[in-house]
Image (cartoon, rainbow, N blue to C red; front, side, top):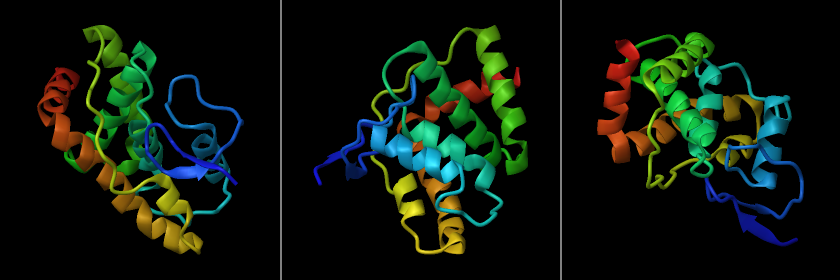
Length: 167
């Protein structure tokens, strides 16, 4: 079966003509893995970092240069920052995302981040684990790796976003 890399996370997956997301840059195969996982196949055991897996996946798939894609990456990185750096609880992820969306609308837009990082882990590393608990054990390292990759390249911009978010 022919394979191709996902254009954003670089995971090499079988070619698929399935659906994709409107602005998240995942290939059809990668999007299919993501949607199946969020529906429970394969199952992931509960983990404290579970609420942040959406933020990591969306940030890892920045898509093109559209405003929606740009804002999505910013909102998800701001959520990760507030938890991983700011000490917010992962269970507050939805509230944190909502606040970042609203603040982005009131302060103008969050800036486009280029270049995109190289990835240490992808969602595929998580789903390839053999058991639900094995998959859960990789969620936190996956989330942290996405955050670290982005912050390493664009920390100054993300810090500026955080200042705008607080004010």
